[in-house]
Amino acid sequence: MENYNLKKGIIFASICIFTIGLQPVISIARPDIIDPYLFGAITALIEAILFFPIFFIERGKLKRDLLNDPVSNKKNSSLIHGWKKKSNIKVITIIGLTFSVVPILLYIGYELAGPIISSLTMKSEIIFALMFGFIFLKEKISKVQILFCVLLFFGLVIAITDGSLNILKFNLGVLILLFSVILFTLVHTLTKIGFERNELFPSQVVFLRNLISGVLLTILYFLIFPLENFAIIIDPYNFIFFLLMAIDYGASLYLWYKALTYIQIGKSTIIISLTPIVSAFFSFIILGEIFTFFHLIGTIIIIFSIFMIIREKKNN
Image 1 (cartoon, rainbow, N blue to C red):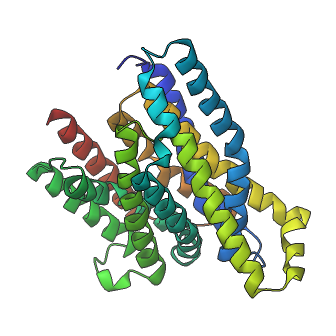
Image 2: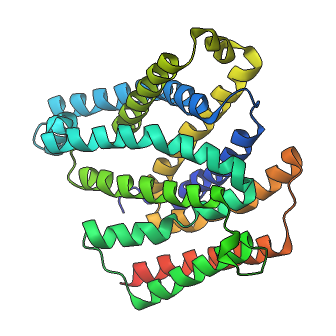
């Protein structure tokens, strides 16, 4: 890797552990008057505003590099104009519509499942990433990876059922979170195709995704609910939570992409697997949530399984 820098990569990924780990805690700590729908709409709008200058600067740099050296920067033209292809317009539309639903489902799931279980449930993403990678990207899956996917799910069951292994104890929050993970992992897989073809770039996708979802959700909200509810948004105390989640979520995306700039995705994924520990710590400090023995056992199994899945993928 041309930009390989282990120290910088670890720093970015380590900070990302905290931002991702805080997401369920911030969501649950918000005032009750802010329902999941409104929370998803306004945080998306704020994220779009935050990412617009990043997108604008990155697009400008691509244009300047292309003008200065058209031969060496041929792919920049594709990155600048690639979104105009019908296939990519469809993908961007799908992303915007999907992430109009996913944040709302996540915020509902966080409330019902609790911050620790939510954070652990989100680690199931790697299972669906392997599955969709196999289906859409023709990526190979080894028997060892399948084995550790099963072990990962087993660790999740231990944590969620408090050691009883009774899957019927999966509450509605866990099921909603699992459905959300399936949705956004599928969309991430489709997005990856655009990235690999050099037709889309990260800040562009993040900006457009939040712009579409934020505008759509906000318009629908105020078509259904009275305009007087706007007071909920502009209330200084409430707005702190909208802003906190938008900054935290946006920072998570930025730090993740920065980590991938310096180290392989496998190393980043292993580091990020520690997020349940951060969620547990802040949940205890802020929300008084108890981190049980079975949470610990489940966390260890999940982190170990992720390590082995990534290790096997690297060896393939």
